[in-house]
Length: 174
Image 1 (cartoon, rainbow, N blue to C red):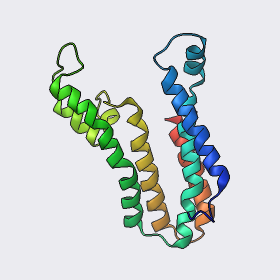
Image 2: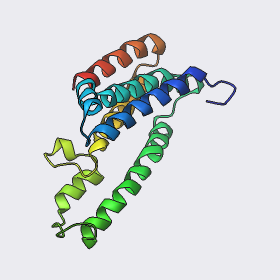
Image 3: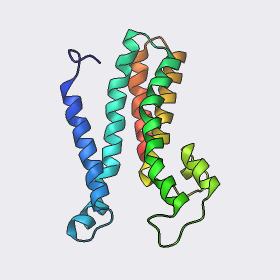
Image 4: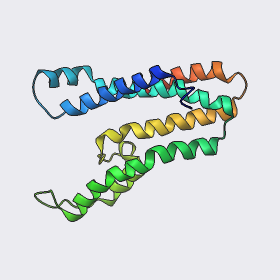
């Protein structure tokens, strides 16, 4: 969206969602009242859900200017996947060199392959970056959106409302 067309309250919602996720991560490995409160309320999960709702609101606007599923996929993947790979680099460095560990852990190719392909949770491997569980869901959402828009071009707005609600509820239930 251009700056002129930007919906300003969306930035506020993104900020709230990011703050909720950061709060969750900050208190995950601490003790005390706030830690117990955060563990009970799970603001990080709610923040991730809010990100999905924001995406569900914004992404359909891209259809109004025409839709090319290949361009859409390339844009989404290039915004997310390279940064994820960069985040894996320090973990790989520490595991390969053993620096930062009391004893050097064994390098597990299956675990790393699952992590690079974002399949850890689905093949029974412990994820290298725990917070990456949201990325396969995000890519699934984008894929469903692209599939939906390319197969159901007529009356897209009404169908998108139903699809967005269904996918959001499904994502929250899982």
